[in-house]
Picture (cartoon, rainbow, N blue to C red):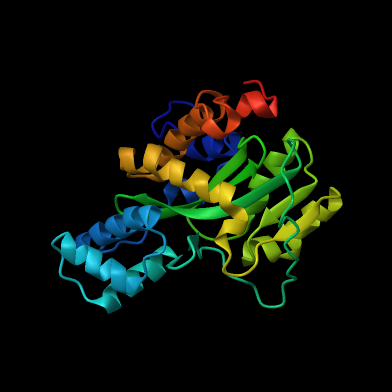
Length: 268
């Protein structure tokens, strides 16, 4: 994006990039500098120890020299959408009346590409707020098929990511959590139209979607925490470069030190 471009307006640039203008002009709602500092600390510590609840987080902050009461810690964890015990960001909550599907993958060996794809949502911090990130991942190859950012939890960015992923083919099973973004008829209809079996994590069972959880850990430690992004366009550009690296250059031990693209059979 070039705000001062001589001939192409911001509106036209957004159209060419398929970027809603609201995403370009959006400025996250502010928190106090102190709370933003706590949000950063809690986000990093949760990524390292997702089993910490508000009591342990409060105790950990005290060891770092911060005196903060548990009520405040609990509120900030809720703001991040984080819940202890199971390492699962509760960023996608169930929708009333939405259909829940059973988990189809317990004990199923993952043996080929396009056997299982899955999607999830995580929080990405900015210097003055946060945005949400979703991605679609092939379980066998760990290849990131698509990703999208959004300033809100509106389900449209999850549907956009799904449609983009389907350009790589059609999986046998698509797995998500039970959040309203995924249980909505507008999302499941896309899967049904493509003949894809729908699988959903058991409630409170983050490890049902462990491959995406590992992806989020890599994204945060290898990119987000190192770059301290300020604005959505910076996050978008930074993550675009990271996911190219992740797919095409970063070897995975679990893949015999091949890249996800090599295993998936994708070319640049």
